[in-house]
Each structure stands twice: as structure tokens, then as C-alpha cells.
Image 1 (cartoon, rainbow, N blue to C red):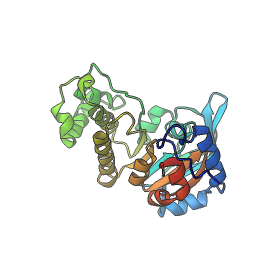
Image 2 (cartoon, rainbow, N blue to C red):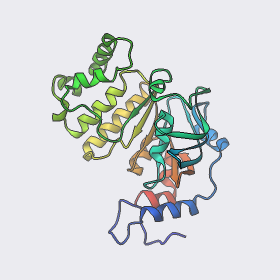
Image 3 (cartoon, rainbow, N blue to C red):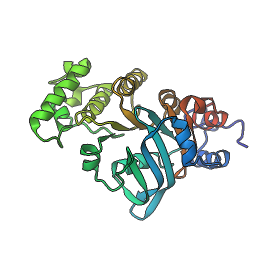
Image 4 (tube, one colour):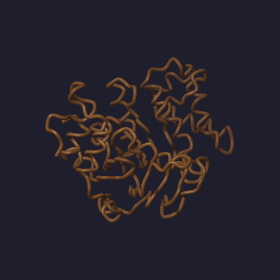
Length: 284
């Protein structure tokens, strides 16, 4: 049992907030029946678009993820939550090819893409990664930053044409088209990062901590943009979000990670109602 006086991280006083180590420990105890691939397939209620099977990955010789399974249907959104060090961002790194894969497979539309390079993941598989840290070029204009998103395109003119389409979609950026990126607000910078990822017209977006460092009004703006990309443009979105409540409210599917394993999975709404999830991750 978890001490009833203990609250999830991000809420309460110093005395009542659970340490990250405690959250991981309690998560492993409470969610001891790890979901298997069959259950994950049932949750998405459609054919799997991107799948991960028994993935072991990490950095150098250090294994971070232990036999991870994942399923997401085309046009769905999935949010990964859990304490720091659980391996959430490592899942995104593995999908995009940024770390070492020791075993297991990653497939898109049934095709094995495990060993593709990040360039191949973007250009051939249509997977884009929106970094957690600010990745804009501060001394370039908004338009020039968008052009950089097309660095893998066949010609510079193609990248310029796609940048125009993005600017047509987002009036807020169009108004700042010739401004240097360093003068943008935090929300505008995040919008620019998302927009730049769209230049290569990906089908899958990997989004790492979209709300990090943003004021509440900009957090809502960013999630509205992501919702539009999913529901209007049909993008498949896999997200890591430290604001677990916001992430689960947005996502169709939620996974709880602890110590490099998926310890719980379900519909986003169902996880929001889960008492243990609320206690550990939602501050309830």
C-alpha cells in the first residue's frame, strides 16, 4: 500500500512529495501485471500502425529499456508518463534511431525499421522528432528556420515551397516570418519547432515534453496545435509529457513506464480515473 499522506510529484509540500525513486518503486508494486502485446493491441482497437516488440535499448553498454512493447494505430496519439529515469525519452530515441538497440524490433506498417538511421527514419519512414530542448537557430529568421526543416529534401526550392504551406497554416508564424527566432516567445518557439518538423511531411511525430518551460496559455496553444495535427491532418503522435494530467487528457492511449518497463497501459481517459495513477502522477 502507498502511504495515503504521500502525493505524486508536482504537488504538495516538500514533506509530502514522493521522490522519483519512491514513485518508481511504488509503480512497480502497484502495476505488477505488465501488459503484453495482445492487450496493447486490444487497447488501440484497430490495426497497429507503429509497433515495438520486446525492445531492449540504451546507451553504450547500459540497457535502459527492458523488453518494451508498444502499439499505436494510424492517426492515434499515445502519451508516455512516469518518473524521471523511467526510460520515456529513450523510447522516442529508440524509435528515431538515436541510441543503441540491443534486441527487439520496431515496425511501421509491418515493415521492420529498427536499424534505419535518423535520416532514413525521417526521409523514408516519415518519422519526425521534436526535441525536448530548444532546437531553433536563434540568429536565423522564422522562415530560414523552416527551410532548415527541409535539409533532406531533394531541392532547396521544395523546402521553400513547403515552408510557405506551413506559414499559410500558422498565421502566428507568418506574422513573424522575417523576425529572428531569438525574439519569439516561448510558445512561438515551440510552434516553430513543431512547424519545422512538418516540412518533410511526416506521418509520425515523436514529441518530447511539449509543455516544458511554457506558461499555461502557451501550453494550451501547443496542445491545441497537436490536436489539430492529429485530428485534422491525421498525424500519429507519440509523446512524452511530464505534465501527466495534460498528456493523458490529450492522448487516446497512455502508458506508464517505470524502471525501463511498461507497467500499465490503457485509454488516456481510463488512466486519468485510475486511483493509483492519480496518486503517483497526477497529484491526487
